[in-house]
Length: 254
Image (tube, rainbow, N blue to C red; front, side):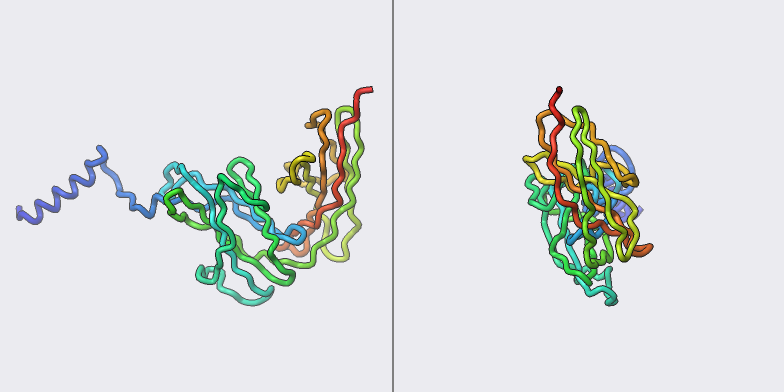
């Protein structure tokens, strides 16, 4: 056997035996975070509401730890204008978010983040790329949210509340809009000390006109707001502006 050939075999043996087992090598660029999952975007009032889940694996599929934050880039265009949504050079960095210090406009629910992009204009469309990054500055793969169209916002529904000893009953209604179709309602809640949650109180879209909230503490003031979900076209579902907030407490025991 030629010396050069023997040396190549020896080097390969070292590489495959170094970790104690044989297998395909994982290149460094496979160790970066995978793309965020469940990414979606929707017009909500005068903003775009972005939702996504933080990755828990790297690109190779192995468990990932140490995600420090996310970078959100955005491309803006006039509605109807043909653009290249896959041309990453046309995206501008909108926000760098550190998970340890979330700024206003972003809320975290477990491994999911909800962000409101309020810097949008009617008759424009917005596409986004969202990528997680690690403490050492490695950017992961990006998730795409394409073509969120911003139209004139729909007015919010009317919301009223009735206080009882063990529950609060909320009623909401909205006149039939001139365009679009009301699919249902989302109800949002917070305590007086905090802002209104970006995540609805209801797990499924509310189709009835009343919701009974029983998961409440006595002596605490709660704030509620409602938004209608409307189908503008078969491909465009938007959330209305919020109703006027109502503040209510459970009734004292009689």
